[in-house]
Length: 199
Image (cartoon, rainbow, N blue to C red; front, side, top):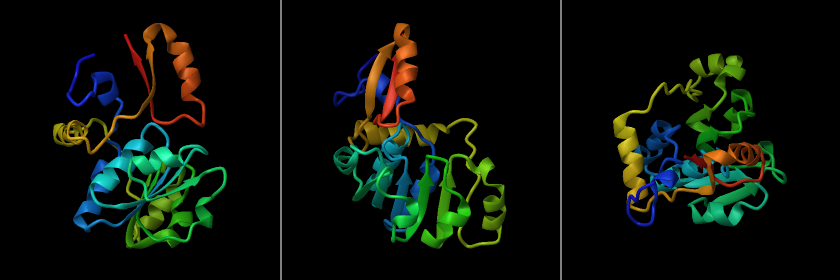
């Protein structure tokens, strides 16, 4: 491990994720916007919240039961618990719905998307009808496939980490000898942020 400055060590910085950054960047070009993150307290969600907030979005998040204070610290304006609030219960209209749970479908989300809103689903292959329907709609559900991340995207995220716009969120760091415990913790629903294994 080595320092990146401002108390950020490499294990923590590598816990960030670039998934969906391109779509979240569209928020900045629209002068803010409303972003909804489902699965906001998970390993990728904590970064989606921070990146969207850093780009000027009003962020609504659904996360674990006890995650509200920490998600607000990371930039979420409004936070709901997935145990208490379903997506259908919400009344807002969003420019981007970023579903990290993989449970929502395009048909469910369209009523909550702005006229040109985007639905980013981590499991688009489970919603082929939605993918096809989005081809004929102003609202979109792009197929997000990132075979490898670009150097430019990684540099932009690293700059956000070093400049303090993104705080690496690591719930626990384990030594390689504790990998079984790490994977058990990874399956818990109430964790917050990344699990890191170092060797």
